[in-house]
Length: 396
Image (cartoon, rainbow, N blue to C red):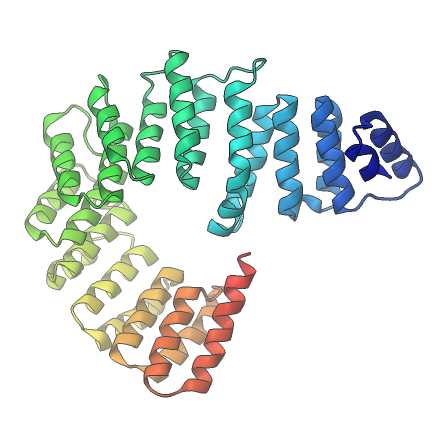
C-alpha cells in the first residue's frame, strides 16, 4: 500500500500508513524504507528524514548500499548537504574501490544539491571537502562544475580548493589544468607543491616531478616536509636515479627526518631499487627505532639484489628482535619466495600470518598461486585460488 501511494503521488497517505505500520509494531523492510526516504525527500521533511535515518541505523539497514544511496538522495532533496556528504563519506570509507564504484552514480545528485540548491551556498571549507570526492571517483564533469562555482562565488584563490582541484584534474588525465592552476597561484605552500608533484607522478611525468621537487627544495621558502620527502624518494627509486636520490637523502639528514619511520623506509627502498644494498643496510643500521616499515624496506632491498635467502633470514631476524611483521612484510617475503622458488618456506611464512592476526590478501594469495602453479602443485594452488576468491567476495 505504501509503495502504491508513493507511486501515485499520494505523499501524505504514504507517510500516514507508515506511521500506522510502526504503531502496530511491524518494522518496514528494506524496500519500504527506500520508498519512504524517497517520499520524505520529495516533501523536503528534513526532521522526519533524520528520524528515518536514526531508524535505519537502529535496525542495521545501514550496511545496505541501496539505503545509503536513498539517504544521500533524501538529504540532497531536503537541502541538508552536510548530512548527505557525511553519508557519502561513510560509504567511501567502506570496502574500498568496490563501494566507490557503486556509489559513483549517486555523486551527481549530491553535486547538484551542493551547487544548484538556492537555499544553500557552500563556503570554501565545504567545497574543499567535496572536490576530493570527485577526484576519488574520477568525476571530471562534477569537478568542473564545482570549479566553476568556486570562480563565480570568489572562493579562489584558496590553497586547499586549488590543491584539491589539481589532484582532481591530474587523476582525470588533464594535467594541463593542474599545471595552469599551480602556475596561477601567487601564494604556494607545502600542500600545493606536493599536489603538483603528485599530479606529475599520477600522469607519468616523473622527470617534471623531479623538476618541481628541486624547485621546491632549493628555490622557495616552503621546504619539503616528511611527506614530500617520502614522495621524492619514491620517484628517485622509480626512475633509478641514484645521484639525485643521494641528494634527497642529504636533505633528509639535513632536516632531521632520518628518524621518521616512513622516510627512513623510503631511503632504504630507494637505495634497494637502485642496487646499492650496502647503503640501504647502513641506513637501516642507524635508524634508532626500527619498526615493521623499515624492516620490510630492507627485506625488499635484499629481494631487488636477489639475495633471496638473506631476505628470508632477515624476516626471521625481524621476528626474533620482537618486531611484528605487517601485511606488507608478508607481501614482500612471499614475493621473494615466489621469485626464488622457495615452496616450503612460502607455506611456513603464509601460515605465520594467522599468528599476527593478518588476513590473507589477494596479493598474498597471488604469490602462492604463481609459485605453486610453476612447480606443478596444482591442488595446493587451487586452495589458494579459492581463498583469493573468498577474499575478493568479502571485500564486497
